[in-house]
Image (cartoon, rainbow, N blue to C red; front, side, top):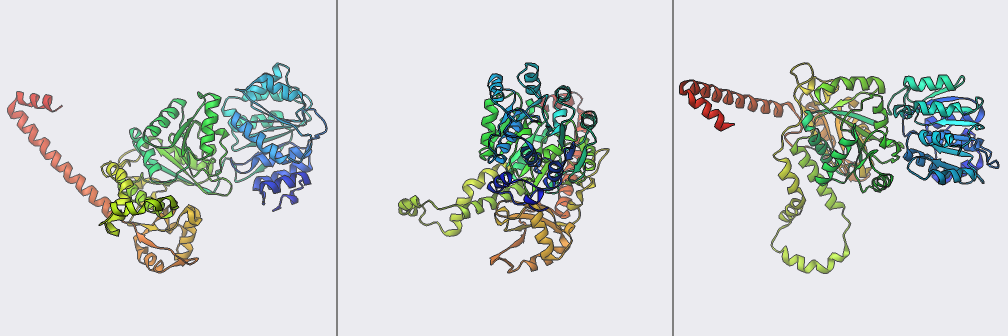
Length: 588
């Protein structure tokens, strides 16, 4: 069933679908809508966040509601105010051609009397957070004793947030003969308990396997020292110009602290957590949706209402306490058919959690290194050149050109380009040319290298890094560029790795043995009449064993020199007696 009409939707809904520009139903919609339209049944649907679950239950619910009756016939419970409002807005769009249908949202942080007034006017569908729903039932403001349908959306997250007792109390006031539809990304024992207690012989729909992630998300992890976590975050941001991301922290305190530090360091960042007032949260979310905030630092609870399809990266500044929560986090990106990247910043002691998450989401992580200072400088330099090339000329400049020519007289083209680029690039170079390597060289349980970690094969051996002059503006993401390179070169998918797609250029790595093939293939190579150039990255720190071996040799030499100095100092101290203590006191 590759069309909404084939699913059995009526004309009013099909017209709304057409207005919204929906063409092909998602997998969860294809599997659930026919079941819910044909039968009066309980249903458990397991699908990752961002797969179109709202429409999967929204379309059948709207079609089954009797809009001529003012009785409340369906309730939808969701974990947060933001998600509650998001569902309500989408339901309004779906039902725009259904006359007389009233959908009301009730949630904390808003006037309870105003919400009660809207319900009293007649609300066939109520979308609610569990806390406010239970409160209004207790006050006699809502009667759900005659409902026909109860939907639990993001059931696992509601239970993670401590709403288990509230949900049980709410469901106990509903009629036994109703249909209950439970939608969840994962199936922990609490969700199974709700299904067993309040549902009768439910049909089950699973999209992508239980607790699994979606294949449009690439998973990466970076091992650093705990004290370098924030510096690592900054480098990941600087290595991805144009980043539009959600950064997850475990606590409200860490969320606020990281956001404030990012703002101080010149990043377009904002915080989203439970200690903010509702007005503050609305302002932050509006700024994020308009791309005025590029790095939204959030707690897991606050992020439940984020419904933005263009998020390029999810950055796990800290892993969640509940490993299953990772599927919710990574589901913020790679939505609506687009690809995304989920990054995890961890310490050596947390490495075992990566294997646990891999087993849950049924996907492998790629072990990657925090970019070096010179790698970031290279990326920023190419980004700046692309930005200059793509900048739309402001014709008002023409009036000042004679004077500008006078000021720049005597500077040749090459020097002028260097000066223009240096205006912005010098800032990055001044900072990053002196920074240390943040990558830890020890694996858990003893001394070793990052290359000993699972998934690190892309960084072993004589790996060569390449620059290619195509990127997101040319319609590529990490998946499609990897496929393009594989097909063009006639190599295996695993032969191309570390694919990093930027705005108008990209980087990738292969084994050194493929260098001649790559450079010869892309000599005078065209795609749609445009030259696609590939060259070996100019950054000497970006890959290969030689650079690492050279660095190790230098470290060993410095270590020998330091050992020699210490040995001489000890001998001198033994001979000089009191001088030894004076030297230590003065030095420290």
